[in-house]
Length: 252
Image (tube, rainbow, N blue to C red; front, side, top):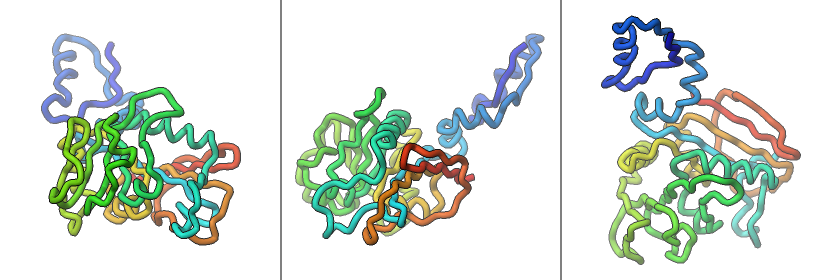
């Protein structure tokens, strides 16, 4: 007997293996724990059925709903979540094919966008930079990891494209999220975790182009600053990580 959780949704192969097994006289049961199997292979099914990568939104916000303090009040990097939550974020990065951030996040935070507090592969770095404003000395351009810069122009590059840094042009006046997904498909990227900032996250939320959201809420408050993204979705889980709360949402 052969037990199959779910079938491949690729029309080229779907069900053919089952047919051959049954033709050979083997008893085949299909659909055992199908929902659990599809969840386990969610990235694959997003690519096959939605024709785009699996999209995860991730951010940390204060108890009063801010994702970052006002730029004018920032003297040094401010962490909203605790060390354990930060380590968990690095685990999340190691599980996805790519990580994406916007221009302002790179300029303000100079993130490395790699995996440091966990074992695993570094994700491909995706950076949105419409007008190529990001200075070439930022960490995302260190050449250590494949990095894709999504921009609107190739004019007046301040550095040359090399084997680790690629430039892709899209039209920022149209559906940005859809075009980004098309770029990711071109590079055969099956999943992406979007880490900010608010404008970039909201871009995907507003066109309903996301699958899952992971939102950390710390126990601090900013009173004023950059507001966290706004969305409405079903909570699938909520856990306490010391003084943080992690809520996961599904966009069914």
